[in-house]
Image (cartoon, rainbow, N blue to C red):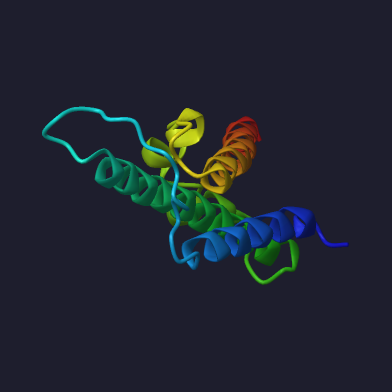
Length: 140
């Protein structure tokens, strides 16, 4: 097995789960909604948050996939080792991807909350690897 094959499969699995969730006709699935104020339609607010959090999942997974593909190409000899340190090949999107979002919001669909948690765990793990490689390259 080549380096990062397991991580690549993990990203692809999460992307497939995200695609399946996005293709669900009614992502909220008739969840009960408590009122959050007279001037705001609570169901609309939850749908808006669910859409924003689905975009967060997509962003995390896109950044993770790009990072993994660069490193797989390096290990395969398709890119030089120096490519890992080019700014455009580093793991990016930290301000959006590191933030904890709707994982704890019980009004969001369980499947979305699970994807949020899994995608953040993956992103944080790759961010640590990316940072460690950067520190080790300075030492060398």
